[in-house]
Image (cartoon, rainbow, N blue to C red; front, side):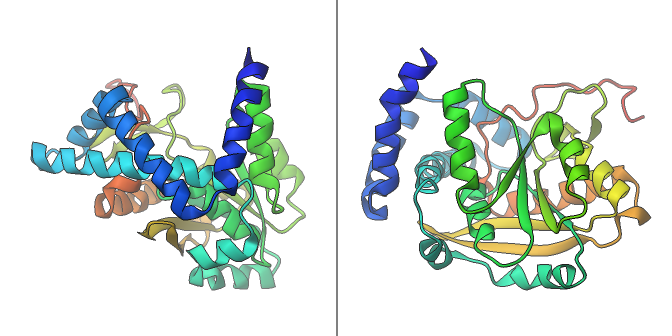
Length: 293
């Protein structure tokens, strides 16, 4: 069944990927109407997440953000298909990356780094855009899909321009194995870990478990952390911003590193809320009183 679904949908995915942007966005508009008004995909989850994250906003304001999010979410999916075929020239045209100079001092001294990101803006196109710069080789930590056919498609999409991937369960071993190479390891660090062993903090006005991996690995290897945010300028165009978040990780505890990232991502989400991934059940776990007490 997995193979059947894959081979039925694959031609459609490539058709979308090869279509001009203007046509792709017309299709996205149609899918938005279907997804939001007919199917109602995870609307309750999205609204609850927004309401808990912005308790000061009125229902009208929350619904406005919700609609903007669904419109962007549909564009995000279609733009992700684009990364299967998009050219380096088109990436440079559509994603501005003036802050790439932040990486150069680390390249000059052969220093590997960690990139800290959230599901903010188009992280897929952002990874492809990074690949066309003559700096670090990018490795992205990812969750393999259960469907091996679509998983192979995702691997092809994310590595076709030269990036590498680390399956999450093997990430530490692979990072250590590449420590003699010049790498930038991207942690998309706003996913939901198991509450067991997670670090708990407050994120978007809610108790939130956070993965400790980025903090522990950067502290262990003393890899500086660069925060990258990918903000939408207009439809089809982005501005990829980078800033040095932690220069000397060994001077901080892993928890302090995680807190610094969480506060920085939170700032972006509060400023432009509709381009974060609100369909994610980020707060499905509840904090026990004794955790991180």
